Length: 186
Image (cartoon, rainbow, N blue to C red; front, side, top):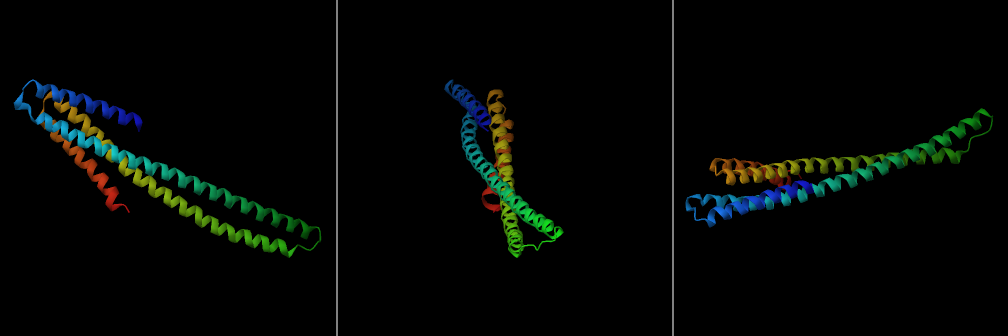
């Protein structure tokens, strides 16, 4: 993510310099270039915000996935304990000895705990999946903002106004993904 931000920052700086150069040389017919530079600056801010939010969701997804994995390991440990006690009871029965009722209670307790642990693990997994989904939506927005910045820079360098409109279209779609995440995915 850092590489993308550095790339976009360099493109934005170069297009800004080029815009100032055009305006400085008194080319008044090309004032639209300043608007491209300003819109690119706004788009860069939106890209930074969207990237930050995407990163937060990626981190949260990873943390909740770790919690889910921990719960599944705990689930397995309880299952192993229950299985050991069951096996011990079977060996005692085969040897002609009475199995311990305490072990039967422990086995039932472990099985009950396993159900509770499984429920927690499943909840963590669902939460992680939600964060991944939200990250994906925001990552699409960041990608479109980055493309918009690059196209805006190309518009300035080639002095082709239609490319600026393409740039704004990409930014509008990126904004859609940002707004979708902020207001509609909860």
